[in-house]
Length: 404
Ligand code: ARG
Image (cartoon, rainbow, N blue to C red; front, side, top):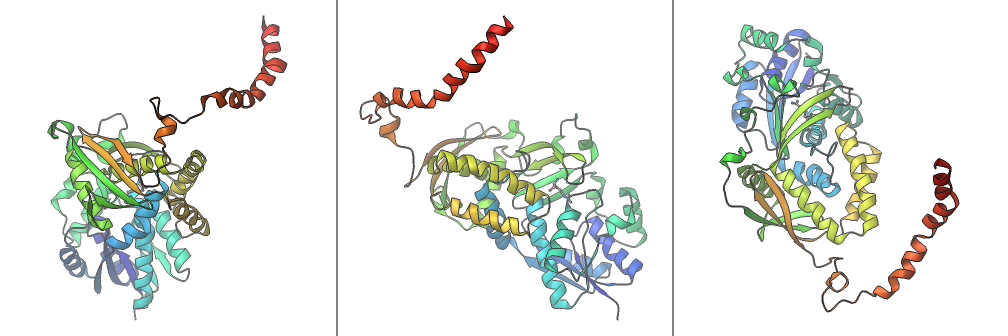
């Protein structure tokens, strides 16, 4: 019997060509797996397409809920943003897809897994490392990494093998999308000087087409997890979907990032991430109210480490478990409501409240009701400034006289 391989299948051109290629080149039986994590539209059509090309079986799975609860929300609680810009939509999805592929491979008794990652990208790393961590016995195939076809070559191969080439292939961009965001690469975007043309954006309106009046949204959080929009309780998937829609209408969430890939390449990445942009801002605003200064400072360092780890494909590592435990503990008082204003491409936090707020009006106010003991400040400053005064006298002032 021929070897069986489970292929991560998006329905796009590259992974469609991969089905045929795995059959022709390796004589394998191909089972495709398509996960709906918020970017896929027509699962039945994708299934039909896979079978039409020659897959022996085409599976689909709705993984939106797991994606949100086990990947997106832990990243949100951590404020994980790569290089201060990228909310990690693709990077968070890869370990989940790897897990789903491994589960199917085990169930079906397949001995290999295939994915569409190229040899220059981050995705190959995320897939390979995750699969190896979960099932070291499985062989990993990455057709696009092996075949070395150009875009034109891929199209020719598809045409020669009766694989439908969608008209959108005239579109030169490489796109990946899920609930947490959409990424656009290639084409004219490879010139970092050229402003992304309007045609690359589909989730966000250009500012000139956005409403003149702002929209206010109140986001309720429970232990760092968003649970309501404008007072209405929502499950995570619906909340993110609604916020993508709404913030996108106001032109919020466009990102233009010159990014450092793990493989050493700098690459120009354009993203649309309306919900992620709003939720990350709102979450940080609530943390500013409910965490101490030292918690905030420490957590900021953890956020950078966590974002790098996610970006670099190390989700299934012991360090990720450790960081996740810390982040989860850090969120136990991060509950309350944040008010954001969406207007002309901007998302501004304009209000926050929490039953466990550390903001104390009577300490902060300059009006009557002030309980802050100002007479204690000179003593505090005397001790606080002690090392600076000492060093200034012993070293810095002498340095100055020497210079003169
Ligand atoms: N640069 C982003 C990342 O590495 C997006 C990658 C998009 N992947 C894709 N196959 N189009 O996470």
